[in-house]
Amino acid sequence: MTKSASFFMAVLLAAAGATFVAAAQTPIAVRYTATTDNVGMRDSIRVELFRWSTDQERQELLAAWNVAAPPAPTP
Figure 1 (cartoon, one colour):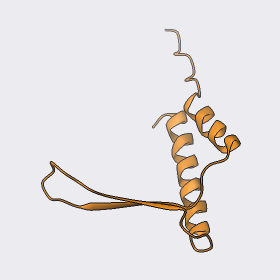
Figure 2 (figure 1 turned 120 degrees about the horizontal axis):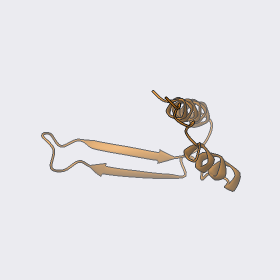
Figure 3 (figure 1 turned 90 degrees about the vertical axis):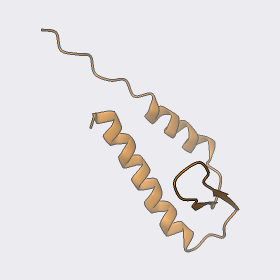
C-alpha cells in the first residue's frame, strides 16, 4: 500500500471511530436506505448521517486526496 493510501485509510478509520463514539450521543440527522439490484442476491443498505461536515473538515479531506506522490527514483 502506498504512503498516501495508508494515510487516507488512517483518516477514514479515525473518522469512523469518532463517528461510532458520537453515534451513542447524537441523534441521527438523516437516514438513507437502498436495496441492491442486478447482483446475485438482493440486500439492503442503510446510511445514517449524524451531522454535516464543517468547511474546515471538508478542506482537510480534500487535501488528503491531493497528496503528491514522491518522485520516482532515477536509475
